[in-house]
Image (cartoon, rainbow over the protein chains, first blue to last red):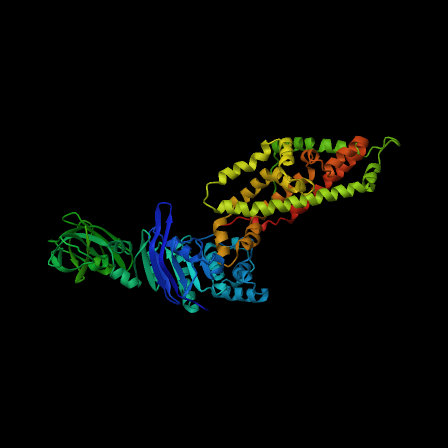
Amino acid sequence: MSSKSLTLRNISKRFGNVNALDNFNLEVGVGELVALLGPSGCGKTTALRVVAGLEHQDAGSVLVGDRDISQTPAHKRNMGMVFQAYSLFPNLTVEENVAFGLQMRKVNKHVRLKKAHELLDLVGLDSQSKRFTHQLSGGQQQRVALARALAFEPEILLLDEPLSALDAQVRVNLREEIRRLQLSLGTTTLFVTHDQEEAMAISDRVGVMNNGVLEQIDTPDALYNKPASSFVASFVGTMNRIPAHITDGMVEIFGSKIVALKRGNESGKVHALIRPESIAVAASTQGNAKVLTRSFMGASSNIICQTADGTIVQSLMTSASTGDLLPGSSVQLRVLSSEVLVANV
Amino acid sequence: MKRKFDLPLTITLAVLALFVFIPMLSAFEFSIRTPVKGGYGWDQYLWAIREEEFFYYIIRSGWLAALTVLITLIVLVPTMTWLHLSKSTIRPFVDGISLLPLVIPVVAFAVGAQISFPEFVQDTVLELPFLYFVLALPYAYRTLDIGLNSIPLKTLTEAARSAGANWWRTIITVIIPVIKSAVVGTVAITFALSLGEYTLTVLLHWDTFPTWVTYVAQENILGAIAISMMSLIIPFLVLTALTLVAPERSTQGRK
């Protein structure tokens, strides 16, 4: 497999008055899986379509390796693409669908069918090769689409929300399968999704987009624990925003002083950004909050409390330690981390 | 599966069948009369087949119709695919234009063609397929439109292009096979309409099968009807063959 790196340089794209991409830059290393994550309309799909050549950028360039493909038509870009749904050719059988890209490259029939069977075997559908696509389930159809995108050994694999039309369980299985295949074939992959769990679960790095701009791109771990902006902090995972005051670089939360991690010139009144798992709740008659609800989720439980000043605080704890936290009971909240991110109000 | 007997439907179909078949059967009965000998016989049919012009005109009309079909497909399929894919606002406008041949009288159309076409175009019978194409446009356009609306055209086109197909191969290997039933419908309608076109052909002073039949009728009405009966059967056989060719697999429901 001849995978290459992918570079987007200063890409801008407007649709009427909307700035879909605004001086957008991205680098995906050889064999890397990068996810673009963001709310709908943030420009992530436009970025993917510009890479595929299905949309043309107003400015900027797209490079595969060190080759500039900005002006190359879509069918000559050698990129495999998996769409949301309904992209299989209904007039062709499963194996003919997978072999389609090789047929377009004028590979002889024997070779391309052999390759199609190899790929179908990889996605566990070789036994279905003679069927028509409407005879398959949604998950199977997306597996075939994945096999079709990989059959001609593309330099880049593009995934445009390939799991969004599937049932929850199928989604989880298929995303693991995509990652397994991507790792074993070493294909450079750009994956667009609005589902953060999906992005975090299988990507080497995740880029969070907002209003046509890449807010932050980092490993899932860093994105979750060290969000670069208030938007990233709230978009990725659940985040408590607790009103606080900065004095001498410290914020006082629930009665204790904690080091404030600033991203800019935050001062005075701020919001402290704290993950639910960084807040401990303990039963206490002299507590600073009241339990509103407790949701049992198996190993962990979600406790929602309200402080005396009305702030709603969410905590995630192991279920074993939440037995006495009944709704209405008085509790003491405590921040577990030694430093907290702050954002301007 | 046993179907329930549906009385209103049966009556409607029966009445329709009477309207279609009584005139045809009467014409057939008329065409096999032998006035001189009395009784019935195949004299007129044998006469028609022995007429050299019978085959000359039927072949001529046949290839003119085939050419019309070709022009229709080459012009309409890519144009309409583009119209369906583009975000441009001209589609309703083109929809409207496609209906114009229904409201413009054929006489006006013929005169317009005679005035505007250069002489070298008017000198060849090849002008007819282009004009037949315009006459068949309202029907061909609608049929293809329905076909293109019924498929996820954008995704299929993008999937084909990203897999390495250029525009022509996308149209030929993906779009046409996927909307096969609409394409077959367009072919059938255009072919039948071109084969039977009379007014425009006469006005432009060309001879094709329908104009020849009218000419024959002035001398031998029984023979003309025999020819007409045969000309009914030929398109019928063509249409039936085309319908049988259209497979069901492309029209089966997608999830």
